Length: 96
Image (cartoon, rainbow, N blue to C red):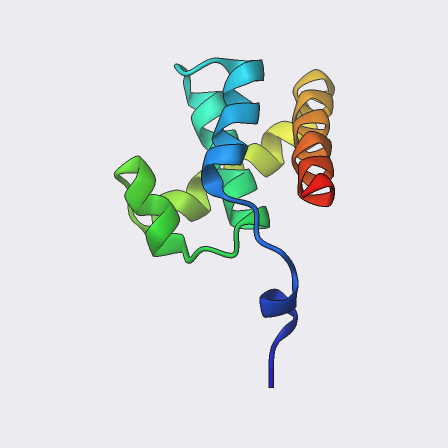
């Protein structure tokens, strides 16, 4: 029997990277962490595989995810930026 995760269309990580880099650039910790956070939320990839793209382990992926969640909670400006990025990613999935 197929699980819910298998039924939801996955978003390629490169699509996420492109949208995040358009907002945060290619350098900097926040952009990197947002890529990790959104990859975990929207690609269906395993933590190990996401981490391999960034040269970190599974715990590093979890840590980056936690930091972005804190940033969203504590910095409304960054939170709105991240929400806009996520909306773009979701909308791009609907167009394909």
